[in-house]
Length: 337
Ligand SMILES: Cc1ncc(COP(=O)(O)O)c(C=O)c1O
Image (cartoon, rainbow, N blue to C red):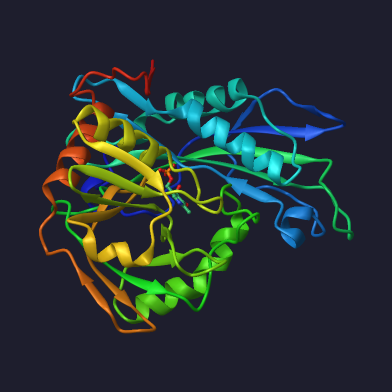
């Protein structure tokens, strides 16, 4: 696309040519429909608007070093979307429907896939919501699944660098046995206020503690948390954490690089013992954490202004796989032709 400045792209919606849709009515899914329409016509009493019967996914397609288009772990996103749909009693799309829509949207919008070397990529946003009109709180009988795409810029312009994070005890993102382990809009609505409070103080992300006891580390903004110490990759385990596909990949990569991997409750006090720590997710792969500030106690944890060695190694390996510079030995890549 001659009129897109790939280097200037942020994480914003950019219109592409096509999106894919499936409609659920009368107990069954429609065939996939491809449209250029960015809008939907929906009843004002639709269940997604009133009771938050909405969920989504996020994944990326990359233009590789060999010019091929690589979609990262699309089937894992499909499975996570299925578990979100089950939790909200929404109709559950099949893996095939999801993969077909993602590959088709990438293929049809090929001219929006940023060139290799720009650090930019094509972000895919599948979204599923209940459309049944009504007033009572009950499962939706009708739903719409849309997969659209938007080119997004390199997360760190001018190279990966550590972020500053604020620890919040005023608001919780998700509760045990709530919906923290699925990707539903309500979790993000619950996180907006603490995010804004942290931003006002100059912090880019919020570190959340477990809602039951406020003793254990949960997530870091819209990303999972990990720490490195004694040649070990440590990441929290909790029923209210979203199972991050990036974290899953980093646990494998940590093993491949000869690290031990521990997925277990991580008490707050352990923050002081990590040699490196970071947030991980599709948007940035790894955001190394340079400083954590406890907004209530004013305690500060510092990890330095340089990216840690292990974080850098893991970041490089994952990007190398995504851009086709390293063998995809775990079968994470779908080539879109
Ligand atoms: C709350 C939350 N945690 C973690 C992640 C990271 O997940 P993934 O690596 O699948 O992008 C995301 C982003 O999708 C998120 O929204």
